[in-house]
Structures are given as C-alpha cells and as structure tokens.
Image (cartoon, rainbow, N blue to C red; front, side, top):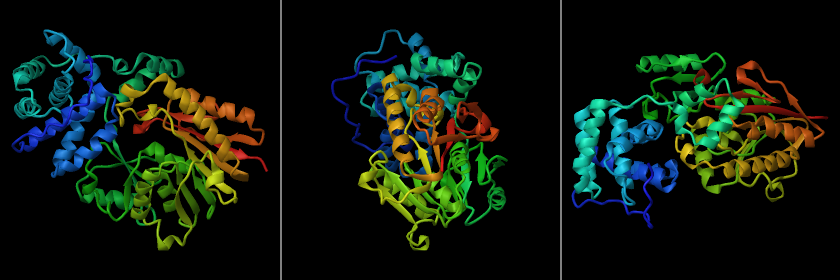
Length: 454
C-alpha cells in the first residue's frame, strides 16, 4: 500500500500551539514512519534527531515502541487497511497511511488503552494538517479495535527475492526465522568483568526488581525478556554493564585471543566487541579501526564508559579512522596476533532490531557487500602474523556472505586454514557456524575462525 511519493520531502509540521505530549508522540511516529516506509529513509537516521525533542524518557520509549511495532506488523496491518479504505490512497497520503500504521500498532501489538490511543492519534491527524481526514482515522481505527487483524504468514513481510534466498539456504528453519523476526528481541546485557561478575550483577538486578536469566553459553551475559530503559540498570553509567546481543558477545569467545596479544578490530564501530575484548584482558594492545570517522566518537564513548580507554590503558588502546582495505594509509608495519573482522553485511540476522531492512535492502546491495567483504578479508589477512588467527563475523544469514565467502577465501589463500568452532556457536555452515535469528533468544550471526600457517 504505497502512495506515489510527492516530488519534495514534506516539511515537519510545527503547530501554532504546543501539542499534548501524547499527540506529539503520534505526530513524530507518523512522520518517522512516512519517511521510512514511503521515502526510503533509514529508521535510525530518522529517529536520531527526533528522540531528543521529547523531554520525557517515557515519551521517547513510546515513540520507539510505536514505530518498531508498526514496521514489524505492516504485513498484517496494510492488507486490512487496503480492504477498509473505500478508495486507494492518493499521492500525498503518505502521512495518513503512516499515522494509520501507528494507530494499528498501538491497538494491536502494544495493546494500549483504546481511548487514549484513538484520541491522541485522531488529534495527531489534525496536528499534521489533515483535519479533513481526522474522521477517517477515527473510523478506521475503531474498526481495527472491533475486528482486529487477521493472522498472516510472517514471511509476507519479506521481499520475495530475499524470502526466496532464506528459504533456499535454510529450508527447515526458514519459517522459524521469519516468525522470530516479527517479534521484538530481548535485551541482552554484557557484565564488565573488570568491575563485577555475572552472578553479582544478577543479584543487583533482582534487588532492583528486574528479572534476568543466565545463558550458560555466555560467561558475561544476562538476558532480559522484558526490556527496561538503560537508565534503570544499576551501574550502567559507571560501565558496570553494557547492552550487547548474545550473538555479538560470542565473537570474543570465537576469536580466543592470547593474554596481552596485539589485536586489530578492523570494523570497530560502535565499539562493543572492542570493549568486551579489553574487559576480558586489559593487557591487550588493541587498535579499534573504523572507516567512518563520525562513528569513532561512539566507539570512544563506549570504551571510556567501560573504563578501558584513557590513562589507565597506558597507550595500549588506540581508536583510529582508517579503511581496512587500504592499510598503507594507517598501518605501522607490525603484524597482529589476532584480527576481528566484523564485516559490513546485509544485516539479515538483525531484522527484529532493524525492521526497515526489509524495506530497503536490494539484491544489488548484497552483491556489493560480498565484493567488499572479500576485499576486507584479503587486506586484513596480510596484516596477520604467521600462526595468528582471524575471526570473520557477520550479522547476516545469507550463505554468499558467510560460508560461501569463506570457502572462496580459503580457495584463493594457501596459508589459511579454518579452525572448527563448537556447536555452541550455531549450525554447521561450511567452514564456520551460523546462528539463526531467535535461536537461544539471540540475533542471527555467522562466525569463522581462520588460522595463518606458520
């Protein structure tokens, strides 16, 4: 149900009088959804400037909840709206359709009190400069309240080309993958073992009335099936705990660095894996590299909050802008004992966290990513000492980015050998291991550990 986009991007509505907080949240939700669904914008880039405008953290949380629920539920909401609308939406009706998606998500996925959701969403239609459509919004959402939404196959949310690739790669697991991606992910925490232990922090959470579970595969992880704001987490600002999915935490286990090793994190942003490595072994000599200088601020912030960057690190930890495929521009000539290559990828393993992936990803994007991954592998391999190890990881579930990528690398690289990883890292997938979305509550992730011959 895509309206023809207007020639120019609409300007944000700035009402003459202040909006009630509930109405303001719905206005922002409609504007973000319109940009993402109808104009191809990134969800992350659209939310980033909007969230700070809401002073109350509860309003910020509500905005995110509405937007994410609307995107995850589009495959059910849009067919119902198509059937209820008497005529197809016009070229300028993107904001209306976005507001209706927001309303459906409130009534269905979020189960908000109907009177509050309806009143605020109808008023948002007026605030968006659409008073003539407020009655239509009211009528459609009241129908949604009465009739609900038909069940649908979660695979319908995926573009046909991508759905076909997942089904071909994982025929027995594909239905579970699509179902998992239609639901929110749990909140995974990584306890900073320099400052606490997993069991001690679990006790702190219990004292704060926050329920959490231990995952035996992960030494530093706790899982919250009912997420809470990070501000509610004891010691978060002091770096005692960080938010990081369980699959991402397993990357450090898969790399398996020796004490005091010289390590390259080749695509480091946002810095979670680099921080985890240093929390495990503060004596590491680590270079956190990223091609985008703008993202390095986030890396530095995460490392400082974890207490692993600064004077205490003794200069052993560096954060640098640089392209891993062009080491001549930044490399000092000394090889690394271990390299973590968390390569850019299609992100098909994190759709439940980034539902706009299903709107924006194209086949040609995957082709370009496969080529970029190959260049990164070749360039990083040259920086690894004989006997050293490289962990190739992605948050993709597509074989061409994962098992196929590593098989091709091994075929052209005589001094490389894949090392086996345990079942705890997921399904056997060629030279590596693949975890699929939702398995053990984690994101989809691929791991392959490569050893360089002496």
